[in-house]
Length: 193
Image 1 (cartoon, rainbow, N blue to C red):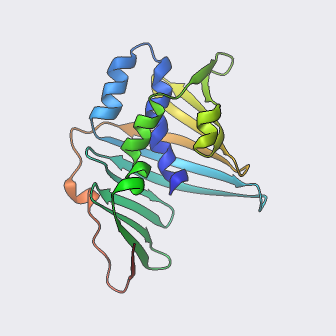
Image 2 (image 1 turned 30 degrees about the horizontal axis):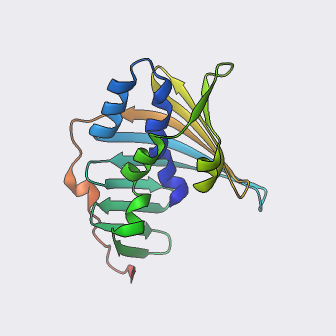
């Protein structure tokens, strides 16, 4: 889940270099966000690349809904559901303590203090320091187009390389509360933590 949720984290991280930082930062952290993306991952150990499309909705109060491939990661701010539609399994846990730190809004707050270096040659922003390593990433590179995130590349400490291409980003006035609740399909195995 960490890799998938990381895409939400970069929303705030790359706006630090934007000319209108305060307005952009307020928009990304104080309003609902909807992102369609493509994720390509090169798995170093297997020397294989996978590609999937996904969507992320971020609401207020720790609410999110992420779908990528056959997986869904949903939280209403109190309960977290991780659903694998292929295996018909759902893992359910209460959001508290350490588990809440993986919520997109918590990760967004983490990156508000990230130390990005601007690479003017390719108009990217790089996060590569002790704090990125602490969070499992050797390097994170964020690309902007028209004051929006267009691409994010992460290199994790296991040498896997993941590229997120942001195909569409929207800031709807609101997102239906039903988007942040998961109804367990009949015949699904339920595992509770």
